[in-house]
View 1 (cartoon, rainbow, N blue to C red):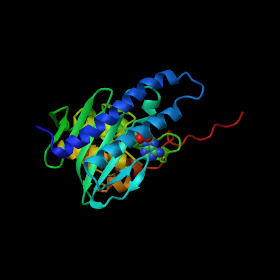
View 2: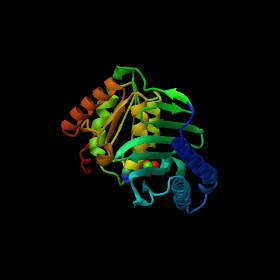
View 3: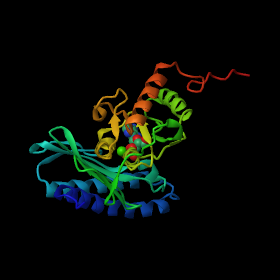
View 4: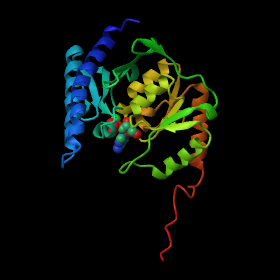
Length: 279
Ligand code: 2AM
Ligand code: CA
């Protein structure tokens, strides 16, 4: 399918920022050994990528608003359109030289997500979707996986690290899902988890406490790949609540039920270990 004018704009911005990120990623390995470490360098790489995307999208669609990870909300003259952008999703991977990170760009029109792009500049994988036009990976149509049994399903998730909320709650959810599924994967990029679920690599995915820019493009991809995506209450308010559950119709429903039941149980011994007795 030839890309629309809108998608060409999004692809152009992502590829240009992707070249900058890929160049900077090549430097990260050298910096690992330096005393200061690459943290400052990575946040500069993130900012550089965001500036490129901001400039490219502003040039092509003057007046559209923005919600960006670094800049936050930028109100445009055109209040019907808003770009939702994560210039570097999978920052921890990037920082550690792990080539699993991406750029995520979504467009909202009248409050509805209408286009999404996720681009990994290392693998050169470009996932795109526009409302009503299907989802594609490098120009090939993608669909969610057809598996209906959790026992055969590989499920993606994100694990809260220090500074993020919900550690005990996550352990309850993990216990529930790991005991009935074929395996759990944690990529470190919520956007790529959704892209991989849309492409049928993962059968399902859930995570909590995310930001709108982590998931906006992935939501469009999931829906256009024939998938189901809601927050943990089964509602279409993922951008507000930051919780997300995704899969085909059956896996999505099974995951929702499983997570709901898990959250209704008291913390297990594993989730809240008793302090060891002294002596
Ligand atoms: P980032 O790489 O842009 O930080 C990994 O589980 C996912 O969670 C990534 O998409 C990551 O985005 C996101 N993430 C990491 N820290 C976060 C935080 N403090 N709040 C919300 N999302 C976070
Ligand atoms: Ca992110």
